[in-house]
Amino acid sequence: MAKKGNNIYKRKDNRWEGRYIKGYTLAGRIQYGYVYGKSYRETREKQLKAQTALASCQTPPKPGKKTFGDYCDEWLILNRSRVKPATYVKYYNIVNNHIKPLVGECLPQAFNQVFIETFSHRLLTEGSLKTPKGLSPKTVRDILMVLHGVLKYIKRETGDGTSGIEIVYPKEEKKEMRVLTKEEQSRFVRYLLSEMDSCKFGVLLALLTGMRIGEVCALRWRDISINDKTVQVEGTMQRLQTLDGAAQKTSVVVGSPKSETSKRVIPLTDEAAALCSQMKPETPDAFVLTGVPGHFMEPRALQYRLAKYTKACGLEQVNFHALRHTFATRCVEVDFEIKSLSEILGHSTVKVTLDRYVHPSMELKRENMKKLPAIGF
Image (cartoon, rainbow, N blue to C red; front, top):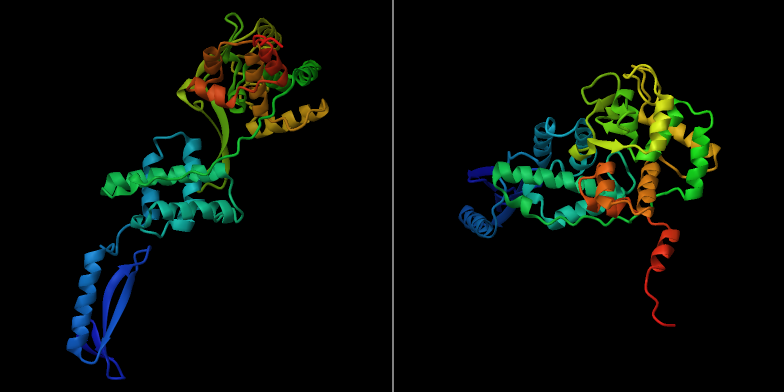
């Protein structure tokens, strides 16, 4: 083609071809439009007309702008010191396994309610990089919450109105949490008391206090006061992914509990305090689950032990969190004051306790129904 100027060329068929920028892809690459004419002048007039019409109806994003993935990386850096290590690892994996592989090359201008809903639906039905099958609604909600956080960051940095987008989160089906019946709990307690060692004692202590698995793993004997009959929860243990390129892919980390309200003092019953007095070693620095200082049992190993214990006494589908729910349920059954229960469990609000941890049994429901006044049958 012979070039005449202004991106206008004479073709081999003697027509003139004019090229103009009509927009950009979501990754910032130029998209061209074309016009044709019998002469350079006619083609130039068509080219100008197309450019004028385009300018009047839209403002195409300029090339060279940062992609959404670039902003994700910046957002991660800013949150690295603001959140707990476990939370940062979660954010890192969400960004690099789910968000960047699917929409990381897009420009922020592409994000609107329809775009995000399409992204959400794809996660639910097709999954993403690490999970080719559809993701659970809970996982997709977590991903969308991170995406929303990045959009808010872009709003602060650029002034773009992306943070005003209404994100529709997928509904989660409420799963019924496993709670031990009174008979199952009695059977389990009898098993733990039989030939009780440090690990069995730790599991029983969790059942009697509602502590989380990481909190029990991090618990040392110095945190238990026999005289005051209290347990002080000051830390939690987790196995976290290593993100610094070290040869070891994961490591055990002992840090502060889940939230500020998780730092708490739990009163012990007389029975629990007596058990503590019986099991207490000479060294206060010893871990409760092992009875040895410097030697801990991580959450994964404790889950394996719990599975062994529950199988031995004929209990099915009991994970460590079920013990926490069982403790809360037993408290509700004896009309435990709900605010006190919420603080013992380390919840930020009473609503969390009521919504997630109160599982009244059919027996309790029948007892409450009997409280209704007779209607005269």
